[in-house]
Amino acid sequence: MADMVVVRKEGLYCVPGQFYIDPWRPVERAIITHAHADHARVGHRHYLCAAPGEQVLRARLGPVSIQALAYGDSIEHHGVQVSLHPAGHVLGSAQVRMQHGGEVWVASGDYKLQPDPTCLPFEPVRCDTFITESTFGLPIYRWQAPQEIYDDINQWWRRNAAEGRTSVLFCYAFGKAQRILAGLDASIGPLICHGAAQALTQVYRESGVALPATVMVGEVTDKAALKTALVIAPPSAAGSPWMKRFGDYSDAFASGWMLLRGARRRRGVDRGFVLSDHADWPGLMQAITATQAERIIVTHGSIPVMVRWLQQNGWQAGGFETEYGDDEADDGAPVASMAAEDVSHA
Figure: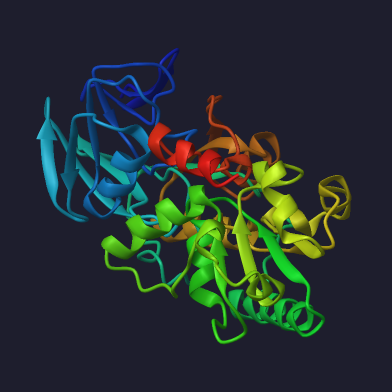
C-alpha cells in the first residue's frame, strides 16, 4: 500500500485526502497542528485547526479562512477520516489522525508529556504509522519536574526583589510565557509582559486559561515597583532599547536548550532555566510506544539518531526532511498590530 503521507516541496501531503499538514509554502488546504510560526504560515487558502487554538491562530495570522474542529470530532475529506487530538505542546496544539483504506496514520506536530495547566495533555492515539518530532531526540535530554523549575524561578525572583533588582526572564512569547506565568508566585511582586507576550497572554485568558494579572511596562506608574518586578520578554528584546528602562536587572533564559552549558554561555544571561514545551528523550519513547505503531517516521530534530535507535529496537523507522524550524527560537512574533504596540512601548 502506498504511503498515506509524503513530503512535497510545499510540505507534508496526505495523498488520498489532498491536503497538507503544516505546509511551509502556500497551498489550497492546510491542517495546522499549532500556531508556532514554523508550523502556521500565512498564504494558505483554507485552514483547519483544533478549536482551542483558533483564536491564537487568528491573532498570529490575521484575517484568514479558518475551520475549527473540536478535539475528537471527525470530518471526511476525499475519503479520509480526519480528527484532531491534544498534543500537550501549547494551547490548541493537535495531533492529526488520518484513516483511509483500513490504515491509520498520526502526525504529531510538536508535543510534550509533562503536565501543563495552560493546555490539554498529550493523548496517545493508536495508529499504524506515527510521525514524530525529535527536537530533543537525544538520550541526554531528560527534564526535571516542572514544579522544580517554577520553584527555582520564584526563588531567583524573590532574591532579586529583596536586593532591589528587576528580574528579566527571556522566553518565547507563545506557549512558554503563559506556562511560566501559570507557575509563578505572583505575591513576590508585579508581573510585567513585553507587548508580544501580553497580547498572546490575553488570548489565553479569553480562551479560558487562568493566569495571574500582568501589565505592560508603559502602564507602570510607580517606577520603584520595577525593582521587585519579574519581566517576561521574548529573546529578541535582549540588548534592545526597550531594556534600558529597567536599570539594574538580572536576566535569565528559559528553554530546553539551557541544559547545555554552551547554550547558556552564548545567551550571555545570568541564569538558565531548563524548561521545554517539547518531549524529552524518555517522553518521546513513551509517546511512540503508547501509539502501538509499527512504523515511525521522524521529523525535525535529531532524525538520524532516533531512526537508528528505533530500528535497533524493533520498529520500522525512517525520516522526513522538513522545513520546520525550532519554535524554541521562535519569538512568538504576533501580527502587525501587536508588533506596533511593542514599538510604541520601546
